[in-house]
Structures are given as structure tokens and as C-alpha cells.
Image 1: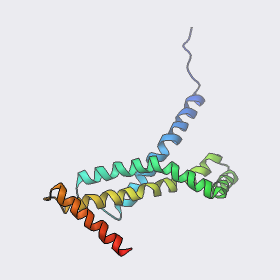
Image 2 (image 1 turned 90 degrees about the vertical axis):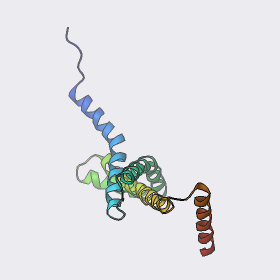
Image 3 (image 1 turned 180 degrees about the vertical axis):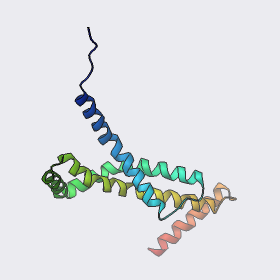
Image 4 (image 1 turned 120 degrees about the vertical axis):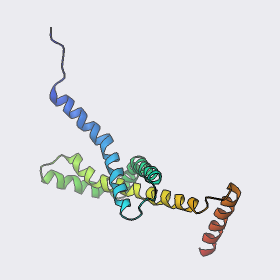
Length: 148
């Protein structure tokens, strides 16, 4: 008696679904990181690693929420993307991905700059204790409030 082997179509469909579910957020995060490298290059390997991971995590976790928000605010954008994909003989889900991928990339970019800014701000205060750093942070907040 032969062992049951799943059909090639079934395993291909399952792996394709896994790539769509998990691959898109990671790919979007990597793209966001690559774009961010163009504008704010990290000074150390440690900083690059931290910022890279944070950008991917923010894109993977915050990106779907941004996609849902844009979909609820502008559903016709997703309908149009599906329609265009169908016109060219593609899968309608691919049209949603064409809209969702740039949004997920955009969701990761602020993390890159925020982490870079915090690391550089703390680096300038390397020889200070926690009280002096807290005082500096309070001064920055006071300056920002005064500017508003």
C-alpha cells in the first residue's frame, strides 16, 4: 500500500498562501528599511541591526492596521486595483496586494527615523546619568511646547 502524498497543487497553493500572509509584511518591512537607508544611514552595525528589526516589526505589525484604515476610508481604491488586475488577467487578490504593499512600507518608515533619532540623541548624552538624561528630555519637551 502506497503512502498518501498530497497533490502538488495543494502544497503549492498552501505555500503560496503562506508567502502572501507572512512574506508580504516582511518584504514590505525590508523595502521600507532599504528606502530609509537612502536618507539616514546608521553609524554602527548595532544601530543598523536595531533599526532594521524595528522597521520590519513596525511594518509587519502596523502595516495591516494602516491597510484596514485606508480600506475603510477609501474602499474604491481597492476595488479599482482589483478591477485593473482582473483586466490584465491576474488574480483579484494581487490587486489588493498592489495597494497594501506600499502602505505597509510606509508604516515601517517612521520607526527607522524615530529609532535613529533616539539612538543619536542618547549617544550625545553618553557620559550623563539617568537624572541628567531625564532633565535633558524635559527641556526638549518644554522647548517643543513653547514652539507650539
